[in-house]
Image (cartoon, rainbow, N blue to C red):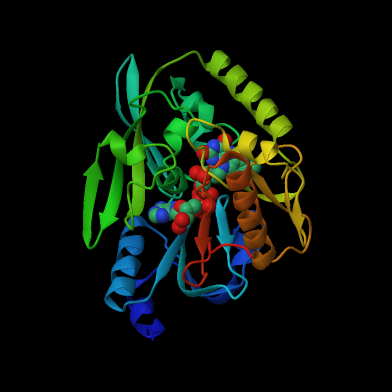
Length: 309
Ligand SMILES: Cc1cc2nc3c(=O)[nH]c(=O)nc-3n(C[C@H](O)[C@H](O)[C@H](O)COP(=O)(O)OP(=O)(O)OC[C@H]3O[C@@H](n4cnc5c(N)ncnc54)[C@H](O)[C@@H]3O)c2cc1C
């Protein structure tokens, strides 16, 4: 067992016990985590991770919880939240034509977009309307999915074991592939070029309108269930398999976007996981394609994706 006393001595942020993860996941599903840590700074974050690793306590980072399905019994270990304590943005190396923008992992993508537009910097505006954090973006391998310009995500800072490393390897950021494995994302640097503030504001507004029209509003949801496969959009494959609108308990496939998982009210994680398995199976039977998960699972026993009967 982790000694809270030991951790408390090193930790300056907030600690909570038995906090329901449903409150921290956009799907509104999930039992409690044994511990919740909200570090107050980068140093605090590195300290707590080091201590948890030394004590062999499993831990899970949660950004906005916008791509996360947590099990009904919850997570046996510690959940670490970086917002608001570790979510700063700063300009680095600016010239007349370009700038580097550093974002701590807990920074919301919406704040990053606003910050860059305020400084008339172009590059990240395509993230407008995506509800995650910078840490979640790097883990999701989002840049290609969200079509950031090549080279815009210039580098990521990772905590690997006890060492902080900086990687510029673009392979780490390929589509929906967690190139960073079990590393912790501490921050990222974005390379932006000078743009026109009014034009960027217009683009942001258009994207927000488009994304809000495409997606279910006012219903708890968890973003995309599956990765695209074999150059086909997962949403199209789900539609072709006749699974749009499919329900299991109160979990449903969105009628607006066939790759989106909804919680219509009181869905359980078991409902959601069953739904995912049935959709996977229907797609495989229809098109021969095995869809891989985009959504991250937490707190499930081994092999949660075993076949439905
Ligand atoms: C309405 C809606 C629309 C969406 N639209 C899009 C879209 O257009 N394109 C797209 O790509 N995605 C989209 N998503 C999915 C989601 O917003 C992105 O995947 C986002 O990058 C996830 O960020 P997050 O902070 O919410 O991550 P979370 O859901 O909190 O976490 C996701 C995974 O990242 C890990 N993680 C988070 N932070 C860290 C860290 N600092 N270090 C290590 N691991 C970490 C978590 O442990 C978990 O495994 C959408 C989601 C919703 C709800």
